[in-house]
Length: 426
Image (cartoon, rainbow, N blue to C red; front, side, top):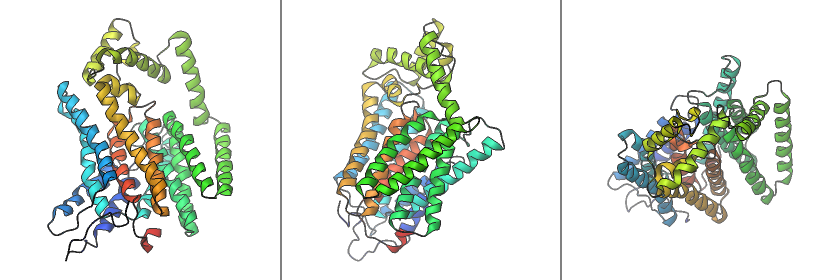
């Protein structure tokens, strides 16, 4: 992507000097408040959507879009139109349009961010602060409130997954601070974000988030080794291993307790078809989903149709009553296939795999460090969502939808080649 791909200042018209600060502030608030404030992601995302109105003013710079920009928008648009169309087919109520509509609303934000890219430090600093806040809130709920699985103002699964994502972004910020030889306080802040973000994920007991962490850690280690940071990889690997051992040996460790419980519940389901547990209920719902999916491959059952079919199976004794209260199948891919058929699953895969390919491609092509780092973070974000979706229908929740749509737009804007500004290194 070309250096000056962000906007064209038309003859006699200069870009608004305040807009890069505005987009940077919006990005910072979106990630910094995402878990510590109820619906904390809303403020930053709303600022980005409203800020895009400046692009409509006559005589102002316009974003110049390239093929890759259109492909990112295609991923967002296809998910919206396929889901909206299938909702019409199934005569779904208006509330079922809410989640897919948010992908459409991310497009004005993407246009604003391409015209006025935020400073990279806004994302990395915001992620570190958001992860620190999530970790401290989890510790408070665990120690002071006695919560077995802290979940902030959302449910523990979503909380743990998003905390893990913030920890991954904080780790990227730490790598940046080391590479740019920033002052010690910046390195400590990002390190604290990494540690406390992981703490929030572990305390939440969200096992799905634990699937994403080794995948992203392996990718990060490979990238660091290629960049010549073998010693740093060894140090981080040793530190991570020591932390895991300490967590496993702690009395009443949530990490080891949740893993032992998962193994026991899996064994109970396999041996006795016991679905009255967290893992057992998931396995039972997956069994039901695999029975329902082939019956309506073209357009799916629809959400209400799936719920009704599941209830009928329970009534006839063909499924455990433990699955009756759930509105999704706790697997993103199976849930999409059952509710929306092959088109719904295809739209979901495009939403994930097309940006994944574009971020990976940009990571290889970008010459600047900031762009390569943002592209690498984009790869890790999509891989995380792919892992989250194995045990949770993450996109049935507003925070999962908003963070994916807007982080995808933010990271895409940051991974384009742009001029190095002194303020970007703060």
